[in-house]
Image 1 (tube, rainbow, N blue to C red):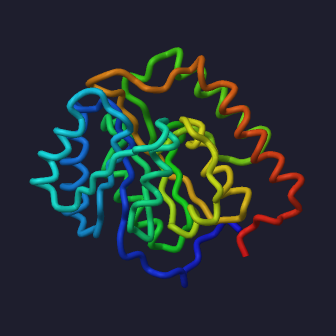
Image 2 (cartoon, rainbow, N blue to C red):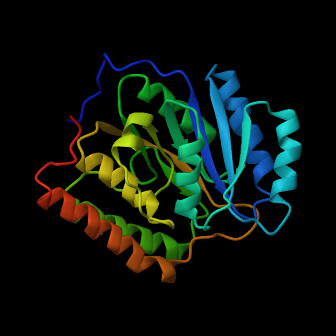
Length: 254
């Protein structure tokens, strides 16, 4: 099934889940721009920031932002840390009937999140952004990471036989029913960005792709370490691939 359901329930609240670790410099602009863009477009929303064990002043910065932005919700991941674990923690705490995962470093464009909301309300279960289709683009993407990204996405596209060419990008939106339908979520690190969309596709949820723009961070250090993630991405791909071809549809959307 890859078509929107026009009779799908209209959405009432858009939850933005942002994992954050040592992002004291990036978070003010990220959150303020999000809140402004959503407010201008009359999108009922909450911005859920998960502090994933920050060692800098991230939590203090968030407390100050909370005093200015009423839709900001702050939680601390008190369990094991990791990018994927922080997202899952946020997904289980957020209140929205739709959710978008965004980065703390303002690399994702809030205007694209507005487009996601509108498409979800047309009846799509998932909206995936791609930086590598007509209309999309990247600004200041490190060349080594770009090469690895394209190689990894070509591999995923080939083994799953799907037209999506930016699966590894975290910036995607889902109806809550999709998140529930993709349980259990097991990836603890950046490989969660692959687990959720691949499970959603394999399990029969509807999805569409739109062009998006990505900008490299202005502050701080990137948390993704390529050397550490290769085997983890491969594991998750193998895990979902086995489900696709050997589960006989046991986990398909009904």
